[in-house]
Image (cartoon, rainbow, N blue to C red; front, side, top):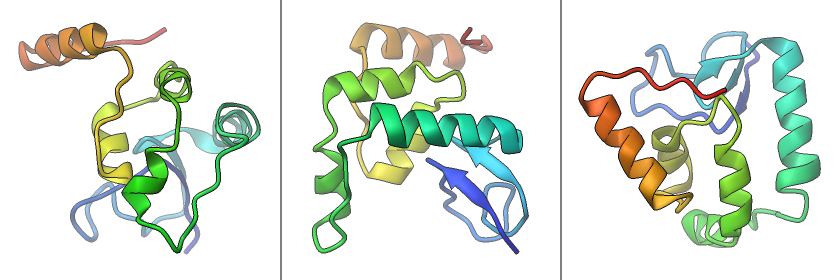
Length: 116
C-alpha cells in the first residue's frame, strides 16, 4: 500500500491516522492528490527550501533549526494542526503565543476553528 504524508503522525497502529491506506494527507487530514502536491511544493520548495534533516542527529534537535518565521508560515497553511506537528517534531513550535493560546481555549470550550 502507498501513502503520501506531510506532517502526519499516529500514536496507535491501525487507527484512522495510521499509515495503512492509499491516500494523500497533510497534518493528518485527507487533502487529495492535487492539494497534496500543492502543499509538498509549497513546503519543500518555498517554506522549508533550505532545511534538511540530518538523520545522524537527534530528530527533535534537527527540527529546532526551523526558524520562527518558517514555523509561522507553516502555521498559516489552512490544514495546519499544531498538535500533529508537535507529535511529528517532538516539541510545540512557537508560532504566535497569543493566537495559539486563544485558539486552544476556544477549542476547549467547544468552538470549531476554521482558518481561511
